[in-house]
Image 1 (cartoon, one colour):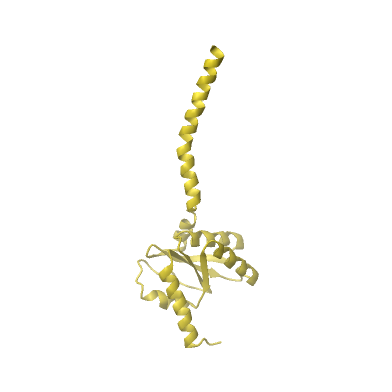
Image 2: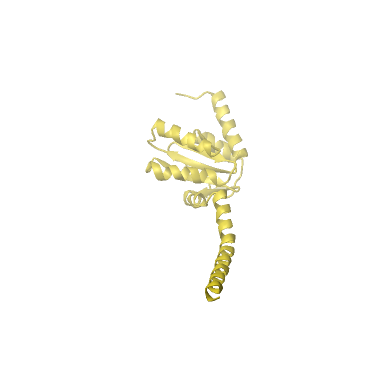
Length: 165
C-alpha cells in the first residue's frame, strides 16, 4: 500500500525531530519478531526513557542526509527502526538487552553517537558501559574500601592490646 505524501512528511518530521533531540540513536533491525514481543520491547524501552520508531529506510536516509555526520552511514537492510533517548548510552544498552533475549530476531545495525556514525560492533561496545547509577556505586565502593580496611586494622590492633593487657 502506497504511503501518501502527507504521511511521508509526518514520518520525516518525526525522524528529524528524533535526530535533533537524541543523545544517541541506535539503528535496529527486526526480523520475525512477534507483535507481543515488539510491544513488550517498546514498553521496556519507554520505561528507560528510550523512544522507538519504525520508519521506511528511504525516509530515515533522507532525514540523515543533510546532517553531515562524521563516518560512514551503516547499510540498512530489512525492516529498520530507530531507538533514541537523551541519555547517550541508554538506547544502546536497552536494545542490547533485547538482542540477547530474542536470539537473532533483533540486531543492532549501527548508530549515531556524539555526532558520528558508529558500526554495530562500536554500538555494542557502548552498550556494555554500565549505567550512571552503577558507576556511582562502583566509585563509592572504591573510595570506601581503603577506609574500611583502615578501620578493620585499627580494630585488630585494639583487640590485640586488650588481650595482652
